[in-house]
Image 1 (cartoon, one colour):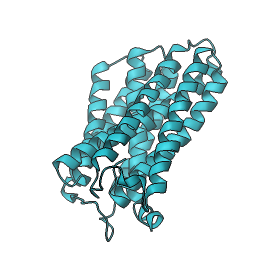
Image 2 (image 1 turned 90 degrees about the horizontal axis):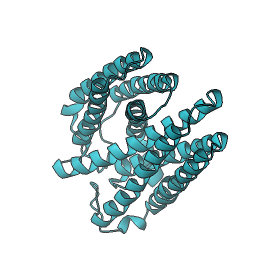
Image 3 (image 1 turned 45 degrees about the horizontal axis):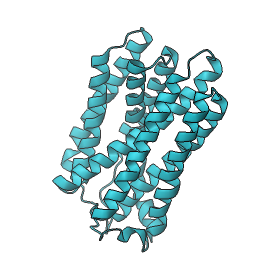
Length: 278
């Protein structure tokens, strides 16, 4: 039954992953451009990939279905046009920012506008699927954290590859991005505990009840494989990057990407399939 409910939510899971990758990687690029010595080639490449992922997210948005029978999620379709308009605005700003990067400019105002537009997309999605003001607020926090973790670790993994062709690049950029990912994952662990303690989500489960029952396997997978394991991997990537073992750091970040992507899938599946926020 749980697996079938998650399968019914695949369209929303797909949207969450694609949008998180696009917005999260753009945010990582913007911060790396303003605060590190990351190369222009890396920033432009990652930004372009983010735009392509954003286009796929936009296409997936138009294919989102209504709520499945028995779904705990309340969908307010009236927000769909506004959310899609915000996603288009984000893509336009992301393309413009990539052009500015290729021209050698920092354009902090454009970076800020793109990050704000990306956050607006996630906030509007939360309003659409949150089922009320409090639910929308909690879901917005969850979507923002998922986007930051998934897009950030993707950007870190790509940056690790850049050291293979730019060996003189200082280790500070990779250390900074990997550290940011570790901080985000640590915040996600804190949120996981908080969500369980208050029974967050449309299902309205009692405190910590989600650790047992029919959905317990997925909840524990989210915690152990999707949160604790990536935190350890991110810490290890930071340490290996500091010693300039860039191939090892990149390998660790590859695994980190897979773990955080799987974690994002499980978190989205639990929300849209079971009404659990974890």
